[in-house]
Length: 453
Length: 171
Image 1: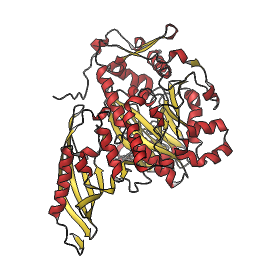
Image 2 (image 1 turned 90 degrees about the vertical axis):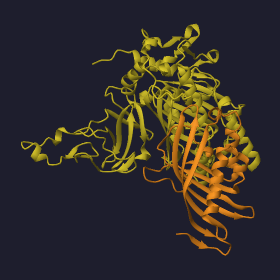
Image 3 (image 1 turned 180 degrees about the horizontal axis):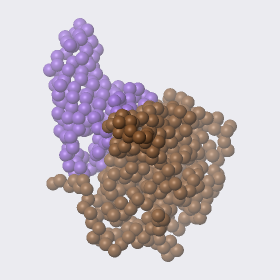
Image 4 (image 1 turned 90 degrees about the horizontal axis):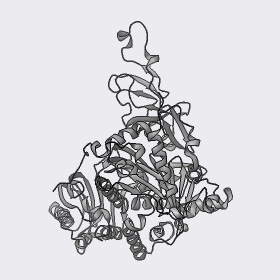
């Protein structure tokens, strides 16, 4: 028996007459919030998402440490569209659609590289890091009257901005500025960015993997505290065995306390579709950042340092990136390949200047949990892929998202207030699902609002 | 060319092949305890990630790896998880077939033997059907009173975007 389904069949018949506006059933005043499972399977919806979400919101592109010097480029995607980020001679970070102005060949031969001049390998046209066409091979023979170079610049990504070193791009020139769009997520990004006075760096080495599931499942799973005690129970057992066998101490401790429970947790709807879960660390002295505690306490308010060191956090920035600071620190970028296929790229991000012991512990914890070749992430993927398969059972239409509704509060709870953070709603357990309301409201808003032009 | 710096009787390629083929067969037959017994207590099992399109990472301590296990206990952790019945991705556990070839002895001393090989592994999972992966092995085999044991196994995996479950049993 071969159960492989590489491409699901277009099944618009099953959702005939429904549109995106019918797929988020938001009647919270009546205690109802549910999402139609065809948001994960419907090919028409997927096409609309690419047009309405990925072209009109700030999409995470890379971290500035991935393009440190003039001419350094990083190739990535906004939805399906190839783009690259490049640092100019002036130090400015820019981004362009990754398509030669002539015949459209992708210009960057690698994911990351250095080139103050990008030469198209097809016909030899040259572009500088400001996107201007600097050379057309045999231009005079082709256009004897006048040079066309000045009209042949690369198409820039309409808006590029960086928040605390995290670079985002948007194809819509009229989008609200990045800081406004990051809404309540900013203070939580600061908790990462402020870990070292020298800033953060993406550590050498990375991994890409494919989820045979819809991209929104990755967004949800990254901030789903509810599955941790079931799907990752076996990880916690393996770590308990290890600690007993090897007598692991200090930063090498594996910090599985969040899985076993018994620590305070919570979740936030941060506005604009951004979401976060947090859990107290059962052994904060095992955090790789613990060594910096005195320095941090001398620099920042105690409440902020408590957030940095004593609470692990998974932050999902709508629509395409997760910033994790749990046992290790991760940028997890996800890209929709198809309605039921998502490409995930994972990077370890770490404070510059940390000790080799802390760095090694951070990396080993990353490999144990976050790597697709590790002992936790494959179990997440299997669960998501079963949800993708189950979503095709058309008679079972709805995903309920009201768990924890009774304890949801508007605005910041006491814990968020320690940081001065301003979530739209707060909830007192990371098992609760009220954080998804913001994500699907933002989704619904983008999918249904009338587009101009 | 095999470099020999040994007073003891030199290890032959046949003996090395026998060990590598035995390891492959024990994995395919899920004889986990026998498989673990092929490793020294301080064994390193290393699958580097790719630093860029041309190079894997070279410093496993301070760069990110796909797998970096220092000590046989780390292999026991892996077996514990995928054999527990409690790992979502590992129930049912994919079946595997390892093919090991192009075995070469690279260097040997009184203490150890270095050998290289190439591998192809078919993994049959109910989620993805049968998938073929391949790569290289670099082994350090230690001479012990029980015969040759694996002190270090480096697996170079030729796959850009990992599609499916990969663990120590199907590398």
